[in-house]
Length: 206
Image (cartoon, rainbow, N blue to C red; front, side, top):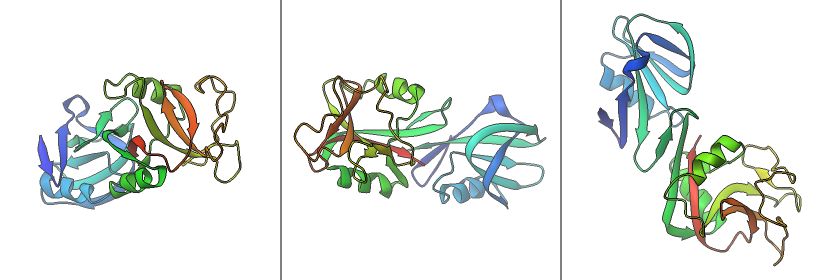
């Protein structure tokens, strides 16, 4: 393990000599440590390869395997406070010791170079609800609102949260109290709540 500026880098020995695409940055570096430090400064970097033969350093925001390149060593980034799911290529942080409004939580996530979590696939939802930190009875802020168009919740990625999704709680969204324009996870299902109420939240790196 190599620790640089709050990020732990672990070598993935099962993927030696593999190349990954597309890199967000390609440069030369005299040493592995310089390479990893360079990739730390790229907020979206989730992995790095350092080629010991050519001194080529690549930083990646995804791990799509392509052509084998002799001499490559793959390092995956583990960021302090974040959990990493290698199958999803996903960094998430469950904030269970602070309660924030939607806008405050959004700002906190942005400090890390991230955003409130987008649970736009069943795989992501299954992973999150399977974490021991995510308690059934707690509310957790998610990255979607219907601020632009009432009753049309949109993820921060721009995709719409389907009204037909089985991930909605019963009779949700209902805007029961008015101005329930922000999305949360409650009892492991979607629920609409007011944006200014305070609750736990989940960040993801992008």
